[in-house]
Amino acid sequence: MTTSGGGDFPASLLLVGAGRMGSALLQGWLKLGLEPARVHVLDPAPSPEVQAFCAARGVKLSAPAMPPEVLVLAIKPQTLAGAAPALAALTAPTTLVISIVAGKTLKTLAEHLPSAGAFVRAMPNLPAAIGAGITGAVADPAVTPAQRQKAQALLAAVGRVEWLGEEDLIDAVTAVSGSGPAYVFYLAECLAEAGVAQGLPPTVAEQLARATIEGAGALLAALPEATAAKLRADVTSPGGTTEAALAELTGGDALRELIGRAVAAARRRAQQLSG
Image 1: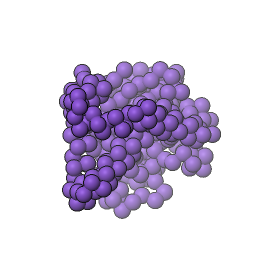
Image 2: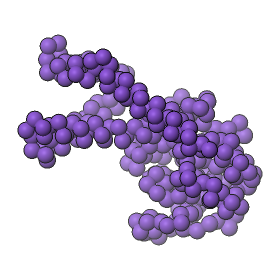
Image 3: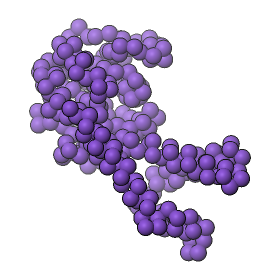
Image 4: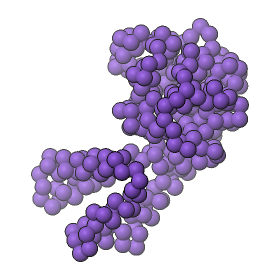
């Protein structure tokens, strides 16, 4: 189910990890009306930009005195075990933990933070930094309707939200949309390099590649009723240049198979990180 907006922000929130994704979430929450006084941020080495942003907005770079209503976990998977003892002391049965830690299962999160009451596992992606992200999320059975509304409000602050019925699908979300922006950036990189190989100046090739991908993405967004396959067909004239190019890309389904292998590899790595 695709949803956006809705629910209320929590009365108190602790963000653990203020890297790129954590910072994007924080900025989205404040932009949509979460009061800075409700927020604490914990990060062992906050960047100068994060320090300046928190100081300017009145967000506390410290642990709260009382367990927060919501704890958002935005740290690297490899650091969870080391951080867990200190974080466990900051949770209570009333605390909802929202984790965007890649690979870490609901069961693993509950083992590390046993005093927390409920858990949501989510995977946003990098376009969240500009409010254009998409997040896959799954809730454990202990999550109440009110807690789910709060999770929805927080996650929807940076883009669309897809709630999943099975936790196993989160690793697939990670492989498709979580890692997906890197695939698109690589396509832009390759397209620009190909333009240079055909004689274009590097700066021109770069701008052509970037603008093409930006425009194609905007067209997908503007025509939600049209599938990507239909849009591809619409731009492919019989006997034309696009058809000649696609014959190279799709011959023997080479590109389809390559992308399939890439997504499968990303999912396997996400599963490996669950330990």
